[in-house]
Image 1 (cartoon, rainbow, N blue to C red):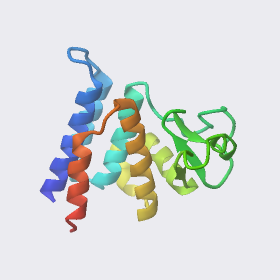
Image 2: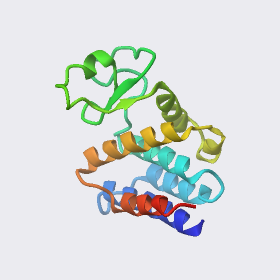
Image 3: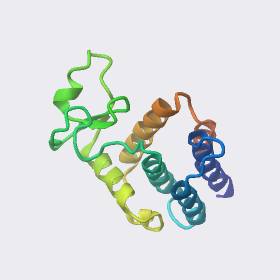
Image 4: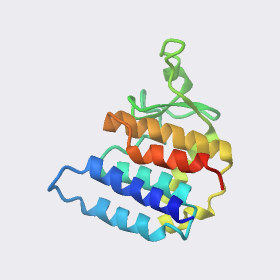
Amino acid sequence: DDLDLLGYASHFAELVDLFTPAGEPNEPLFHLLLAGLGFLGTVDAELLARSFELRALGCLGYRPELERCASCGGSLPRGPLAFDPAAGGVMCGECARTFPAGHRPPVISAQALAVMRSLVRLDPGRVGLVQVPARAREEIKNVQRLFWEYHLEHRARSLGFLEDLGRRGP
């Protein structure tokens, strides 16, 4: 509905504003913002938001590592992995185990990681073609929120608004 679309548009604009120093142009980020706003209402808005977040991070030099272990640089084994914003992305189990119990980074499933990789590669107008189960959507939303908050050093207000919209139901 229109309120949801307004929430996502606000989220896109807020992230660009928070990460772009005043007076410093970032043409790729501007074009990404225009594309994101242009596709709202035509594709799955939640997946478009996750794609926008990943691509915006790339425009700013912060794209999370999704192909190799962000800590050791090694290949990623099959199965669940960890996602650590401080390390810069996904981590192999061996590196994740170096954290003390209770302080380990959140787990991300192979399915959620595959979706994130697709969202980076796909044209924003095609993100609706990706079939994503609710559990993987939640994982992606959570790890990306952690990543943004780590780099922003505070929480984007638009995320709270989107969460409130999600709680109100259909």
